[in-house]
Length: 139
Image 1 (tube, rainbow, N blue to C red):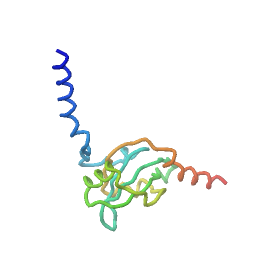
Image 2 (cartoon, helix red, strand yellow):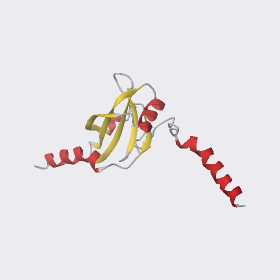
Image 3 (cartoon, rainbow, N blue to C red):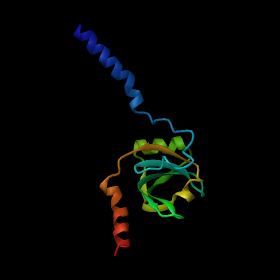
Image 4 (tube, rainbow, N blue to C red):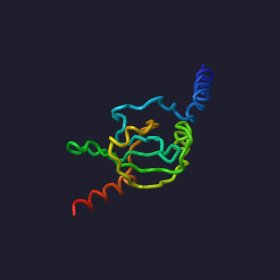
């Protein structure tokens, strides 16, 4: 009886193992209001110069009207040719930091074709450039 249960568990694990190694599907659209652009969102977005770059949002700052929201992000290289390729590069860890901090006003980011490809916690190391920037503004 135990061997049958163990075989069933092993068969279930082997069935699920290939799924663990795949990139989750990329959403077909993004939220037109930007409600999916939150802290920890990993976003693939089209570049004006061509290709699709991956960004990670490390902070979202709500400013008074008429300014709106600012997205503080990390930009990664290399650029991909599709959203699926960008998600695969991120999953495999084949990205390097191109810019450790960039700030983009939400109103300027929303017109770009973009997809949230994952959501992750923001590490202290990732937040450090943003915190240094905030400290420098308070001097």
